[in-house]
Length: 358
Image (cartoon, rainbow, N blue to C red; front, side, top):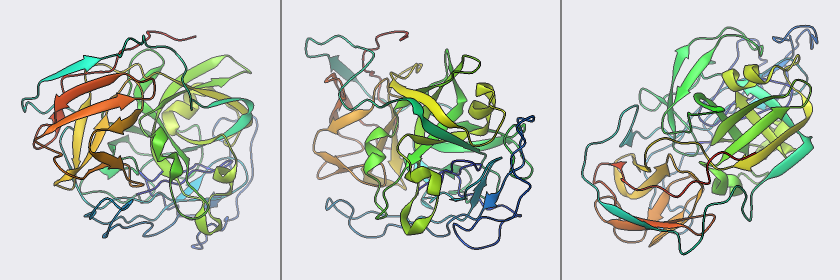
């Protein structure tokens, strides 16, 4: 499952494989549009068709073992501006574990910071100051569902709470994502897709679950989004996502930034710890106990004992998995250990947080 994002269009994310009615039907081919309207937040711009059936996985992934489930999705992304973006790649397999609530399954755990206190930046954190770009999107542009919720390349699930119409930024369309940061500058409606690789890979999968603070220097507005999806760039699609620093941003987060056009360039954002509430949540992929996503984390997970992260976002266990113990280490070196609930759910541990970062 991968998402599509675009600079200058409403980007789509894997999570939401978007297909717009105004599109030409050719993947990555822009349809005619009236162009940007700098006086209006909704803008007018071009729409582009999304990618269909991008990335089903039915064999080995990252050499770690079989991967069940398939991915499908077609969609387009649009926004006031120029450019094109194809839709997100979706995993058609269902995810068990937490949704809006928490699994009551028992799990005990412990944590160890290894003598390190939490800080606001880390090796591998991303920073773009006036040299990034954004696009916007919403789920309901003919996005695939899995099975009844939208599902992203990073394994997050979400729902459309307010439908949209057309392909302009600035509209009231609203989507809610489970297990992401939702306090302070963050909301459950604020998330984003990060670029995939030109060869069809997803090396940016390491940023799944990471939070980013986006700022509009013109008005000082800031939001914190959780990176939950991929914007594919292989096959010539999603030209904006080929640019370093591009993010395809959920409609509500984009609107909160207050841009007057749908595809601003020269934008600013940086990686920050996630202002999450509660503890780490384990989500089992399509009922396969050896494939587990870890969500609602303060920092991105860097390593998991006896597991390797696949390009589909989940951690593939060589032994154990759901129902067994796991040690998770974040990008700052903090380690927590817990038993993964057999059906997914509350790990009852969390990485330490540095608090509010400026």
